[in-house]
Image (cartoon, rainbow, N blue to C red; front, side):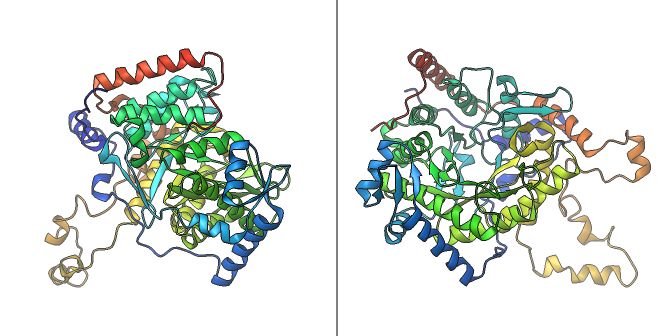
Length: 524
């Protein structure tokens, strides 16, 4: 392998671009905020007795009803650990076995991408916001709605790198449908590593894709593959197919990650009324049972493997059956999921989503509802926090901009309040006197440039000036901003030799895979 590159952080490069181009996109300097921590007390919709009742109900599900698991490797892992496995592949586990397994998972870990300045602290009070992940389509107000493709993937990852509000990249900003399904993970991982130097999530479908992604991360970081087990560098997210089914591709992808020391978020996708009972209590009990089964499998695979407790519970529209997000139920579930994660001393993944078909008021209020639940539930990874639209069927460029504005609001709100004699400003009060104003006093003049949060999307002009400026809505301004951001974007520095090595790896793997699917079973 070639020698490591001399790395420059994305923040210093963005600051340089700001000085050179006199950009009007004022971003928070996350270098001063990171690691971002949530110092507010979590909101807990469940009292202690309710939480214990739901925990015991989850244990009853795992002991008595069980969960179907596909794949002989996963089933044999459960058998060796002492679980009961039926001929039909139903796995049942004693609650003591479950609790012993999850107790071996770490409460915190650090995720370090190729640029160590962008390392994420995971667990505890730390909070990290992620880019939209997985939609089959993309939309912007210039080109309209279209199927996911490579060029739009590049735009989405570039925006995720450009905006400081985004801490990590999801499994795929949009599904790249113009490339072969069996090798597109190589192309998207290459872009994740060259257009971006933040942590990213690998596509967790099958062990082959995961193994490829970890090998590419090892090349990017110039770490031997056999040492990656000690260097958490990328993540994946797997979904349990609710109700109560874990397929072999998800199981094997997650097991491969665990074998090589990379973190996995185990996230049941549960919609009340369709995939769980139409009650919050039923949904939370089932979500918890499914998550604990997946986490147990990873601890049986490699005790101490870093894992994340995932919750993705919302409801359906009972008139149509369509998924709904950003509902009161979704927000409560986001907060309650955090209670389970804290009970088991695990990091927590939740989401900020909406079901709107347009970048409009509905998109904003539903995302804000979900985001509040995620933040106040003390989510450590807030997935889909920037760009999600249409119930997850669309990645929206305008929505990325809007959501980054909301994330910056949240990051600013989470800063501790400074309280001391200088901040209180009794001398300023004395200087101004009764009936005066503070605009020109020394206390204000010392602080006027940095006293308050400065938005990049909100327009605070009076109505007359707003009309003179074109009467632009927030959506129109967001269209202008993402175009400006892409013009200003510069990929983060990477050693040319490392880039060549990555490209050579992708070429070789494509030749090996040909028209075959990546290997499903787990590499030893």
